[in-house]
Image 1 (cartoon, rainbow, N blue to C red):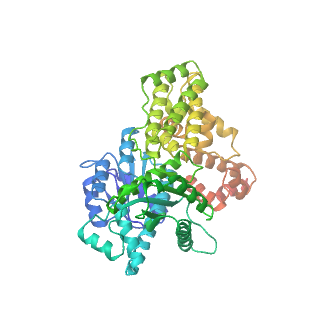
Image 2: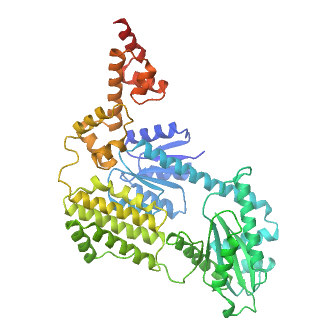
Image 3: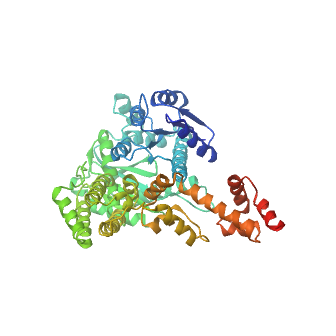
Length: 535
C-alpha cells in the first residue's frame, strides 16, 4: 500500500485531501503543516507520495521538492498552488514533479491524479520486486555478465581495477574496442490472455533477444545483452577484423526493421553512435536514448539511428517579429495567416536536430505565452477561451505526437481569433440568470460543468470560478440543491413514485438519490410522497 504525506499549512485543505484519500481506500496517511516538518517526516516515515502546497512558512513546497531530489529520492510529488503562476509550474516540472494542481482542489481532478500516481507506484514496485528476484540467480555467469553490463551502461558502475578484474573473469574481451548500443523499448504495456503479464513480458524479451542474435549471427559483431526497465538492450562490439567501412548502419537499421516484423508487439529501437571501449558505454547509451526521442517527430517509424548531433537545450525562439505577425493576423481576423505562422514554427522545429519531446515542450511554452499575450493585448480574457494557462499547456503536451499537437494548436488559434472578433462582453455578466435559463431548458437532461460551460462558450475552469464568485457556492452544490428542490416539489405535488422522480432529476440509483435527498431536506422522499397522498 502506498504511503502518503500531505503537506499544507491550511487545516481545511489537509482535511479535504485526507477525505479524498480515505474515500479511495488509502490508509497510510500522515500530515505536516510546513516544509520543515515535512522534511523530518520524509526522513522517518519514507512516504511514496507527497502532496504539498507551494506557499508555506519555513520551507515552501518547491524548496522541499528540490531538497528531496538532491538526496536522490525519486518519490512521487504532487504540487498544489493557489496561484496560477506559470513559473511555479515550470519549476515544478523541471524538478520532476508528477503533477501541478490549482486550488481550490477539484475532487475529480485530484482523484484522477491519485489513480495515475498509484499506477506509477505499482510499476516501480514491480520493477523493484523483479530486481530482488533476480539477485539469488546472480551466481550464474551469464546473468552476472548482464547485470554488471547494465550497471556500466547506466553509469552506476564506474571503471576501477576491481571492475576490470571482474570483466576479465566474466570473459569480456580486453581491450573491448569499438562498440555501440542498441535499445529495444516496448511501446505499450504487455497484456496477453491466458498468461500473466510478467510471464508474457519475459517471453517477448526472450523472443526479441533470440531474433537479434539470429539476425546478426553471421555479422562481425559480438553481442552482449543488458537489462532495460521496459525492454532489452544490446552492446554490439566490433570484432578485431571489423573495419570502419564494415559499419554499415543503414544495413543494421534494415535488419532491425525486418526482425521487428517477426514479433507481435510494437517496439522502438534506438541505435547509438560508436564509442571506443567499455568505459564509454554510458555515452553510447545516452546516444541511443536520444535516438529514440525521434519517435516523437516520426510516430510511424520504429527504428532510429543517432545523428550524433548534440541535442539542443533550447527550442526555436519566437522573436518579436513573429509576435507582430501573429498580432497582425489576429487584428485582421485572418485565421489562415495565423495558422500558417504556427505551422511554420512547428515544421521548422520538426526538421531541426533538437526535435525531441523536451525541446518541443519549450516551444509549446512559448506559443502558449504568445497566444495569451495576444488575447490580453486585444482585451479578451484568455482564460475565457483557452482555460487556465497551465491546464492548456498540460493538455497540449499530453498529445502523443507532433501532428496531434499542431492540430490542437491550430484549432485553438482559430477559436482565439473568433473570440477576439466576437461582441465584447464579460462572460460572467448575469451568469446566474444564464445558468437558471439553461437548467429550466435542460431539466430532463444530465447537467455537468462541461455541458453548461460549452453552452456559455467559456472554459470549465473560468466558469467554475466566475460562478462561485457570483453565487457564493460551488456549481455542483448549486445543481444538486436545485435538483433536490425540484424533486421535493414533484413528490409533494405530483402522483409519482420515488423511482420515477429519481430518474426525472437525473439519478439512476434510487438509493443514491434517497441519500442525497435526505442530506438536503432532512427528510426521506417518502415523507413528501405521504403528504401528497394525504391531500
